[in-house]
Length: 325
Ligand SMILES: O=P(O)(O)OC[C@H]1O[C@](O)(COP(=O)(O)O)[C@@H](O)[C@@H]1O
Ligand SMILES: [Mn+2]
Image (cartoon, rainbow, N blue to C red):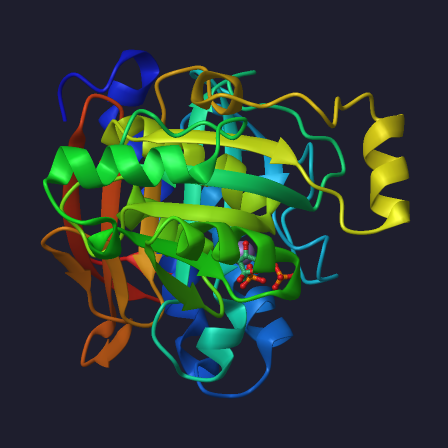
């Protein structure tokens, strides 16, 4: 765990975050396949909030996904932890892939990132973000997508048709898919879970080279911590999807034309932890099994990614919301 940088090197803090995401994943287990997404989110939020109470830090929630879908969430500005220790900001999505979990399908995870106070960008009330993530450093939102695809093909020594671009399957993203196809790349559509795809796109040698399109703003900010830690490239720009959202975002003083670089999204050493609700494929050799009942409690597999390319898998059994082993 050495080399992740500053307060992020603190093993007690890593453990506190792991306890929060594992507790959240374990709490959702009885609801996986239930068809009730709000109940999945609600169970994860309650478990996470409880687990964060004794985190050894002065914690503040800056991204608490859920507002967009009027789903249960950790409140923006909510404080957590003992109040002793480093000043930390938390960007959290108690379950990304809520509907996948409710349907009992793969790709749902409890995910949270922490960084020193003030390190995450403040997108105000933005719900949607235009995102571009790749392992290739040429990823830039104000350049044609075809340039990036060509650069990736050249770097990999393959034809453009072997470059794989993940695009969330939404009408708002039709233009991105068309641009990727026009450049000769293969488009890989997906229904939910742009955190999982962003993680894969950020690492060279996975099944994905790029994630592009408009998705959730909270997911974009929290995944930037992991992209940074993984050494990937990312840019983003607010992309309001209604007049009301546009007005709220502008009123909050957010510049809609400004491209956020990776440093602008997350400026400090950061830590991202994700715990599998159902099976999760964050890329590389990592494949997390979904939460499962065992004799002593619920077995949960997690992936920890810290600044400085430190990453590892954690496996533990959770009993009544507490990590037993
Ligand atoms: O479903 P929408 O409104 O298009 O929003 C896209 C966002 O929803 C998701 O697919 C699922 O997110 P949640 O499960 O947290 O609701 C995200 O991965 C993505 O960023
Ligand atoms: Mn989400």
